[in-house]
Image (cartoon, rainbow, N blue to C red):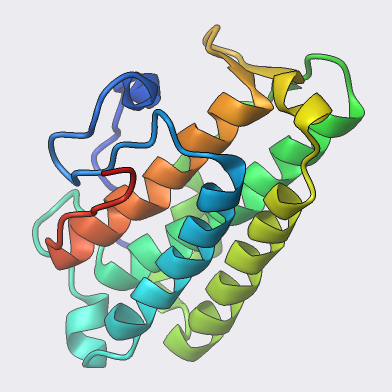
Length: 184
């Protein structure tokens, strides 16, 4: 039986653009696009030590309503993919509106709990590299292009990139407990 998703997180995390995250330690508010590209690559490497641990630990939820380390790794892979898609929209359309995304529905539909860790590792690295490569190609003129979420949060490419990197960094902290020095 597929375990229930994580307890829904209804917080508006856009505040991470204005101040350091008191939980994971990341301070993304002033990062440059090149730093974010490298941070995505580095984050993917950080998941190696997680994915290569004992499979029983990897698949065990620490408590009900909290994903297992493997489920978090799958989620981070999908964050990289989703943000790469949204970045493409921002670069090709004028002020696109992003469709809602419910990570718990994705977790259930994609059966993160049954994923092969070796496959997830390869996919996570590829997805991180794909978004990092897109950030590497951003021109100064593109930094001001906009996009928006359905809840009214507005982003420029620059703020979008900063917002994006917090999610994988925060989730690596969720799993390892190791505070980030990103942006410090």
